Length: 255
Image 1 (tube, helix red, strand yellow):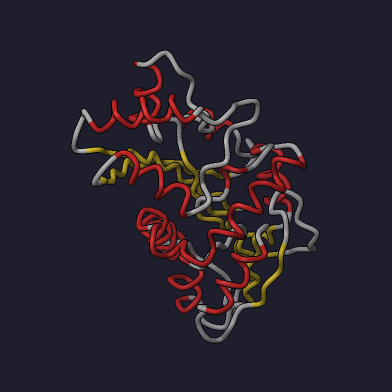
Image 2 (image 1 turned 90 degrees about the horizontal axis):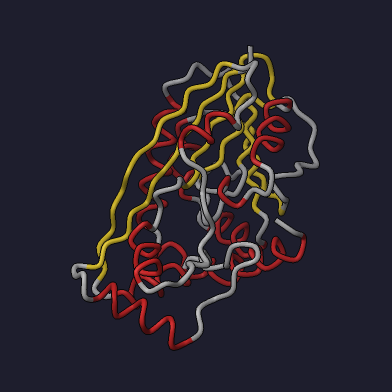
């Protein structure tokens, strides 16, 4: 992700923060699943926690109250997201920082580093996972979720049927996701398919815009208005309009 693209992504999520919670049921479900997996891990008493890509706080709100006495630092690249997470944060209130999670300007060690549906925006997933793993204390856990290759397959199918190229990012499959983790560490990965239904194709497109997730992939251009109308009409003809979310999960424990 170039600096310019990363700036655009941060700006879109900053703008979306005010209404993100109303349009993110999948993100809420994924955060709950990730939290359950984390709580199954043995963690240090009063753990030092770093959260990457906190967004409006889906993971923060469900997990922080369960980790009694945690020293929790919630970070996000978008100022608006940090502000929204702070406003709805559980007590005791975590500390907050606007930060690019790929380049954490922090010193460890942390007992837990977690990120729910942020890693799909990373420019260099293997490098970032290695950097984050290096910030763990012995016995510490790195846990995150990301979007996988089958995400929005219906949207891509509509483009392909019409001879168009979707501008949505191409996410990695489970095998590539597993290879991205540091090979010398103990890692567990798995995936999950979630599906949403929408009243219309434009309703789906608006939902992505409402959560700031409509930034085109590098080198891709948004559809022209006429092309977009064709894609929406194709999807509406397949009613009900479905959207697949392919979710990847990973847990690493530092020896």
